[in-house]
Length: 181
Image 1: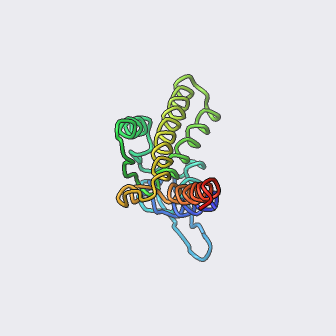
Image 2: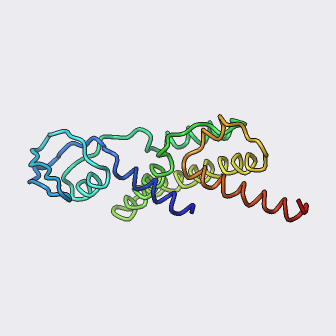
Image 3: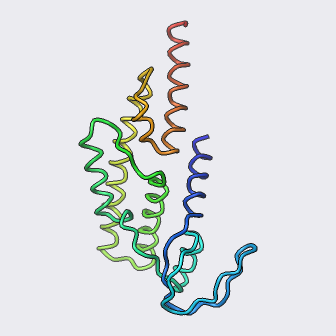
């Protein structure tokens, strides 16, 4: 159930339109029933993320910088979450973006290993773990509460809500078995 929620969220994220700039001319591209292009160098347009990433890997387009996908932004998010007693709201695509960013860093290290790239990857993994662990602790605490505040549940991503509901169900079942109620 949790795995399918993550896959569904990732699919939705990969279908989202992103801004790209063509850095090389590109002939017409047929995607399913849709024909895109041709595109000249310098043309700016929107493409589904999955297609944009494929074209970027071929050196045909450059994705517009997404400021939410940086070590600085990840560090800020982790810092804010760690200092808050309650679950802070995040973008619905937060975990998809995080997985994509970590994957991007891993590929960067594999393509051209450098100390700087390796350090960025390690720091991002540490900050991502810190942030996920902090959010998980808050979600587990909320799952123990029989009536968690709705506004805090609303601050959860889809993946977190699936985890939260599964955990609450498990906790309630366990309580019932232990207490005989």
